[in-house]
Image 1: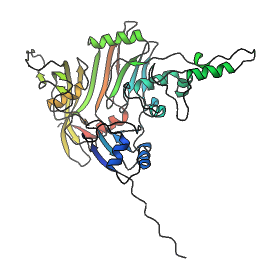
Image 2 (image 1 turned 180 degrees about the horizontal axis):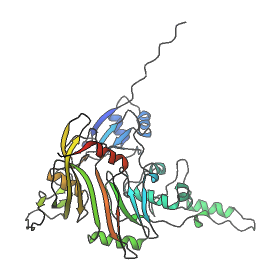
Image 3 (image 1 turned 45 degrees about the horizontal axis):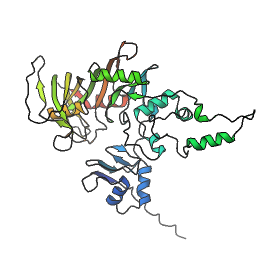
Image 4 (image 1 turned 60 degrees about the horizontal axis):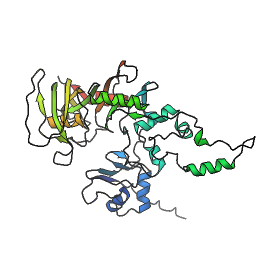
Length: 400
């Protein structure tokens, strides 16, 4: 009897990056994949998402109800993507009763937007934000967080529970408790009224982009949060970043007024970024357009060199340090891009290929502020994560 001919194993479904246009805006990711992959069934598309093979803007997406926006970058991998950072991916550098200083990994959002709460609690556990991860660590782990009835998102938001566990409505819990009796015949106390851990209301005093790693200070009590916020508003905080940028650039001060839409739907300057040489006097600039928000970035050091690609080709790059006078959204990325030196790995404001570049090479390396409750000046520093430091050292060569 002849042995059966082995059936060929089908190649895994792969979809090259697709940039969402107006025809796909507002559709769920499942509906979009069904349209782009017509030979795949609804269940097959959902399985791709469950397997961490669907990326949106280079990060695994678990929420099949997510609606896409214009210029989202959607792709399907042949194999599962690396798991997203969780509470074990962060490092707590300083903890007291009022504040926490944490080291945020690349790929983790600082805080969750109110309009970005997945219906499934399981999805929130699989894609934690920094404040959620810090809360879990402070509470002693996920089980302790749930037992303490403390929401790892924030007060007033839906309770996060592990997969398969349904939330208990307060009224139902009280009815069950009234039916239970202890040894004396008295009703047992509700678990909702006897938390095993104190409330923990963690709030980030500032934000880093999802693609940016580095230092973040968070408050544990409202009073500390308000005082930290006032320091950031008054620009009394030291914030220093390290970045790898394309091209050679000298230390200088970059300043502009940032607006939400520079004409192509992206944030940018209402006028070309102004270069001020060190020690130069500022000159007033007139512009008939409505004013934006003033943003100032000081490039304090620049190490010029060459980028060594995997193909052996070289390109001019600079390893820089910059300090923020202000903290506008995407400020450093916009200023460097408009100056002609976009950050390596920037998929929004960059103009270079992302091939072989694993991340946005921007890192919040130093953070200094006054403790909001005791008035002591604190300063923290943190180098690049080990894997990124090794990548930088292997791809950067000083200019000879």
